[in-house]
Each structure stands twice: as structure tokens, then as C-alpha cells.
Image 1 (spheres, rainbow, N blue to C red):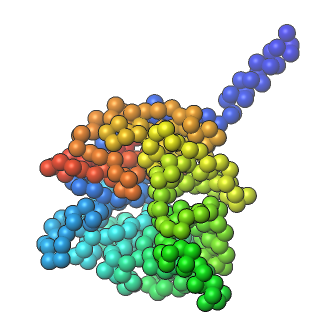
Image 2: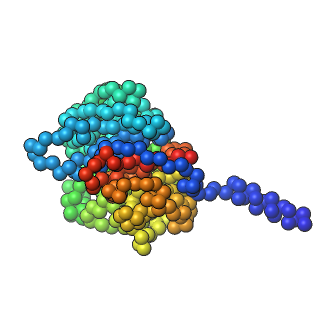
Image 3: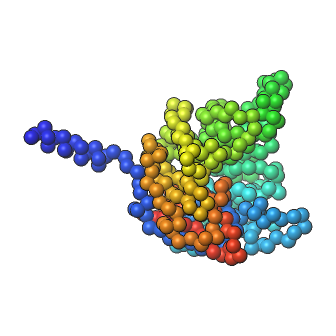
Length: 377
């Protein structure tokens, strides 16, 4: 009997301490109306602010077409109050990239005409603007520094520009150079002269390392100070697929997750060992390529066909053992709202107490019916 009691006590302790997947039943759901045809968004790590900008390609503007000025601003929402906080203006053009710094006090916006704007989130004012090159890509602040990193889009190797936001100067251009013209020609032939673009960049807490996905579906670990680069996930393809549409890192920086909507796979990467732990295939159901970590053990990701989207909540150790929640049962959405790859996205606050879904494509006549979906616990 004494051994039996000991067994029950140990079992109870195991159940209480073993990490379990958070469930969406723990969250309350609300929506914030937004006037948008299709927008990309970024959220502060604490989940308090969300910034969004319209995707210019949706409007299919021709040279000489007039642009409605109301479409061009970066809108910042207070998610706690559910209200529009700021409408931030820059050049008379659409921004293409935005990023918050690590404490959410600064928002950066890049315009493809060649300007970076920095806004102060205390009052929405312009802190500074930095002239740079047209046609650049993804932005990310390096934590604990005044540095802002941005990917290039037109070189045959990944390249990152690093700005000092205090001075407005480019302080480094980071890339791996070829050792000879023969090596360069061989590489160009193998990649069909296609440039490599960084689609996602996630900085580590050291303020100098990023985990990045490329247009060739590779995942890199790259120290922007030393230039040391390590390929964590390789790709045999000779042409870009642009398949990795979502990435997330655990707060302890031990694990990265890459979601590939072209291959319908989720790859779990051990960052400490610098190797792939597991690649899970979702061939029987479309993977919508977006995901967010609710804690270091739990991933929320989306699957399903258009109009029948499902939010999955699963332990990282068994990604197919997911609790499933029909999106349009969970929240009442206008039928004109469409989940659009590379635009619609999931984001979670660092404590996992807030999950946000936004960036729907609106295919009706009244874009004021678009929504930000906020789940709180």
C-alpha cells in the first residue's frame, strides 16, 4: 500500500510539472475592425502594440495612377484598448517593411524608393529618416543595441546592411565573399544566376546573431559581427521556392521552427546543436505557412483550405497531436475575408498570453469590414 501511495504521488507530480500544450479554450476572443484590403503587420514582443501597412501589390497600380493618401500610412493599434493609436506618414508611397525594436519604443518603416523612417512610439513623431538603397528587404532590430539590420534582394549571396539608428549611417555590409572568380562562376551556374533573399530574420539576444530563412528554403545562423555563417537547413534546389513563410524561436533560444507552405512541412531545429531535430510532413492537409509559439513547448499553426481554416495548437514534441479549432467557428468573420499566404500571419506575445491573427485579404466592396483577431488569456 505504501508503494502504491508513492506511485500515485509521483504520477501527480509528473503531471503537474510536465509541460503541456496551451489550449485556445483558455483564451477570450475579440476583433478590432480595420480599413484594409490586405496588410502586413508586426507586433511588439509584449503584445501591446500592432503596426500594419497595406500591401501595394494588391492595388495593381500603373505608372501615373493616383494613390489614395489614406492607404499610405502605417497604422499603429493599441491592442489593449482595441483602438487606432497613430497613423504614421512617410514618403508619398507604400511602405514595404516595418519592424519594432525590442522594447517597442521605436518603429522602423522602409520605403522601396530608398528611405527608412523611424517613429517614436511615445507620441508617433518621426525620430529620423535615413536615406538608403531602393529595393531592399526584411528589417529587424538587433536587441540591446541601436542597430537595425536589413536584407539585400539583388545579390547572389545573402547580404545584410546594418544601420546605426542614432547616426543614420550604414556601419557594416555583411556577406560571404567568393574566394575566386572560378568559385563565383560555379556557384552562379548552380543557382541559375538567381539572387538569394532573406525572407525572415530573427535576432538572438546577443545582439549580433540572426536566424534567417532564404528564398531557396535554407535556414542560416549568421553572426553579423564576425561574419560566421552556418547552414542549419540546406536545400538541393537550384532555383528559389520562397517556401518558408513562417519562423519562430523559443524564448530560451534553444529551438527554431520553420514552416514551409510549399512543401507542407514544419522543421524543428536544435539551435544549441545546430542541427535539424525533425521535419514533419503535412501532405494530407495544406499547411498555411504561419505559426507562433505560445510557450517554449507549444506551437500554434494554421492548416486547411480557403474558407475552412483551422488553428492547430500542438506540443513541439508531437506537432501532429494538435488540438484543432475551426477559425470561422472560433470567431465570426465576414465571408469576404480570405487567409492569404505571405500576408496573413499569426503572432504571439513573449509570455503567450496574447495571440493575434491579422492581414486578411478582403475581396468585397467594403474594406472597413476587415479585422484583427485578438485572443487573450
